[in-house]
Image: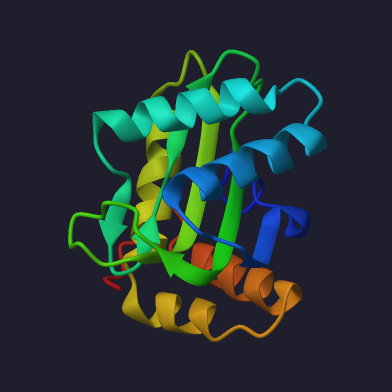
Length: 161
């Protein structure tokens, strides 16, 4: 299972209204449940918020990686949101977040799922990638730039970013 494979174009969302961390997570939960019949929006939201209570998934530089396990998730599911306006996400650097990469994994998540989370962090920690994503002007361009960054960070690639 690769990060590139679990992020289809229709789950790369451009100019998403923000407002607050809660609203962003509610938006994603509703969106993903509408597109994945086995998932319930309230359960997805509850699990994402529960994870946030353990500590913010705002990793700094305007990026958050909300993630959670879900018993109705058969395989990893991801989504990427470029917010119209940054929101306070209680990030470790105190900066507002405008790039949100969400990852849902099966309840019995294993090392492969942890590797996916690590790959997301690697992609999003690259300053050039963040710059390119922020300057995308359409959903299609955003998806293409994100997939390009994911391919450059593919497992086994030890090139420093």
